Image 1 (tube, rainbow, N blue to C red):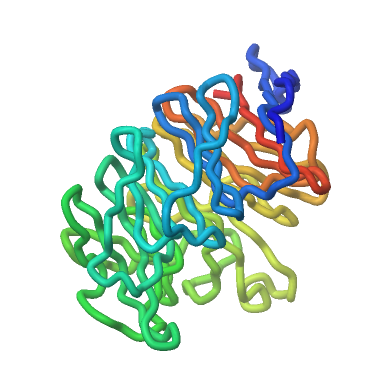
Image 2: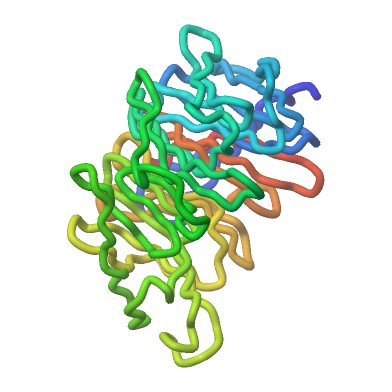
Length: 332
């Protein structure tokens, strides 16, 4: 489908007071679903559809970028470093790294295992959860790409399926034990977060999203046992921040709000995409201040991707059968 003419919508910032106004630039409208999205420091952005086909933004328009060889489209995932200087593609027979204008294969030592959660901490510092084996009952922990080869990080060998890591955001790992921190070659479990609900065990929380970067680490968690912590059978979602010593609950409240995206950018700022019962919106946190802007069109936000070095954000939204790709600026 042809890229439509760019539509620029100026939306007043709801956090009030600031002279700058958020700018929502609609860059693409299409019926085809988008499975993953990433942006790089070179000013490019990438999309991958469920058919495995890539699209590339060159600063002015989107154009087809082919389909990598031996790629399994239903598992496609684009991941980039916070600085935007290292782009990876997962979902095929082997991980691929964008280098010198082409995709370069970075084969795993054991190619029969599938890639789980992924994170690019910096250039040539890539962490992935790897799992698989007979009847998908084996998990081999986390592997680390050091620029030359993949190394075993978390387990040193095959473990039971219970040790599967569901989130990876260096130096943080999440599995059934809760939140783990990788320090000096060892993983260490940290205490549960300090929240207003009084829950004292990681079993009371389900970590839904985790991100880390120059500004530290953030997580979104659902209170999974509210009858024990809240005294009723409702549900609560909280935003957590690592303050260097402990995980603590921070504003804004996220009750009755789905979180579609959580990302730290290269400046240390946090982006959060929310789908409440009302209008979807994006929150931006910088140096203790929150700013909020409402999605101009669409029923919900699907995913976000910070644009390194610019203070902008790529936003994927859904409007009926249409996928919308926005570029949001003016909220730094």
